[in-house]
Length: 242
Ligand code: ATP
Image (cartoon, rainbow, N blue to C red; front, side, top):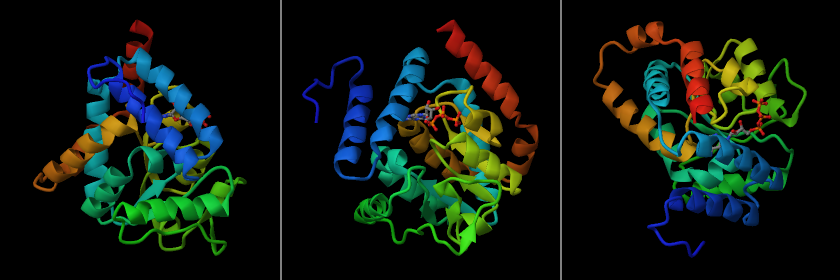
């Protein structure tokens, strides 16, 4: 771990960078994941490395969508597993969703490494991609899914998604919640709910909102009012304003 003191103004960012590097060293995160992380860091820097109101609004909608879902699934890739394994497991438990591994760069070893990593962090079970269920509208490795997981899901929480799969999921009639620091990515623009925030900050807030929503009798009304386009416009304005 970095020897930067906790008082350093960008301590959290540097700790997050350490977590991604550790993920690569453990075989959980692909080397390409470092590049994706760097892109995220740049956007986070411009957003002041804090959760903005547009992200809180999306987090609220995401919580409402997850608690009203019939078959939610939490999809995990190598970056998300390295950055927030405990929170992903807690979210899956809180909404009664399975965790399913789905990665862009094909590697059975890495899929197994992510699975072990999640099990070590307390996941009761982890679904793996299979050749028995395939997502339509997609050619990459990410089309292989689990028949009882993503294939059958109505709502998928998938942080740090890639645009192609997000499109394929939406075209398959699924609602997609993503966390993406870039409000201009194809993923951000295609998802049903886009949380423009760092996944490390967004997940604890989402967990909090999921608990609060359990006692709320109107999650559907909140979803009806929610406008993802408006949230993305607000995020882009914030980025351009610096
Ligand atoms: P798309 O295909 O959706 O246009 P992309 O090709 O721009 O995406 P990818 O490399 O597939 O991007 O994924 C990286 C995305 O994840 C980037 O948009 C980046 O901003 C975002 N990202 C990286 N790290 C984080 C993080 N810690 N929290 C939230 N978002 C992140």
